[in-house]
Length: 381
Image 1 (cartoon, rainbow, N blue to C red):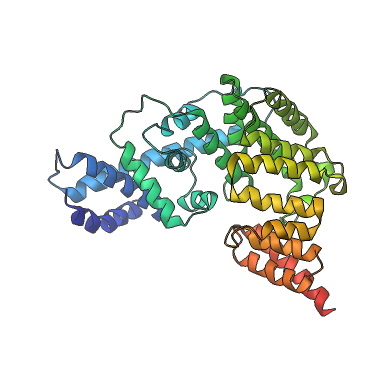
Image 2 (image 1 turned 45 degrees about the horizontal axis):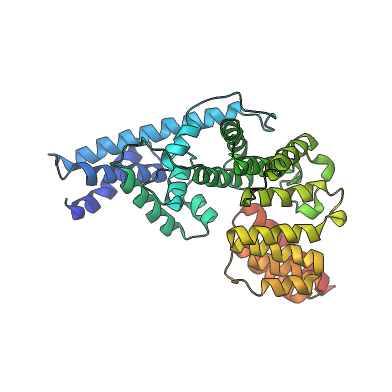
């Protein structure tokens, strides 16, 4: 295998695909897939025309990916914005593909990344943001996963836990990211719940429903992000909340707590509060304690610091925050919120501005910038 030749041909083949109508990112992905195929096939059957072989295989990979993406988008159009309660009536092979991509030959992290890219349709950048790693690191992880499974027969499906992780990340990206995948993730989770007697499947479904119920209130008429404390709770979907709570209660009754059930319980407590002042923050802190025990997630610890600040005061929240890594995404935003509640407006304004510069979305950046401007105006006044 002439790796130097492959590296030399890669830009040329990408250029050919772009001239044929592929966008650069799709062409790059297709060529990477073709290179994986070359690594597998060329040692036993080297082509006479390596460049022509790569162009033909990469173009086929691009067309396959384009058809899969078009099919996925057609499924999204068929899904209602507010998914109907009960089991999904639409049956297709998407859920089966999720299980096949979660192959035992891959680590769970690699299986999730590969499935999000190949089936979920997310970009490498979106997946990297979900995993809190640099985009280059995620690109290498996905490429290694592709190489690992390139010669594997997909006869042994992956496990439920890995598929749940993929569905969770797809929902999160659809709920707050660039591509609307939330309704599709709910549909697939409904289908999985109908097929599988698993308390964490129910927990994830409940979590999705409870978050989706607040969707209409998350942005204002001008597209601005509306924080939970400022949302018009009259716009929350009480039907979805009732369904989510019912699904959660049946899962918790089985007394096999998992992280998705714990997250759903936190969402249910927010949904149950008629006003932000009536939120049961003490119980929310207790559920975050359970979530940290189950996952030891830095994101869970960050959110717990917010809850502690509401339950026990901003000084207690800042003490909890001080034990975390300041490089953690949204750390500065949480610190700004707690500093403002503690009366330190100068530090809060600076932290809001810092948080805006590293915000993962335009809506969040604009919100944080407005928060900094609001405090600076107060300080000048």
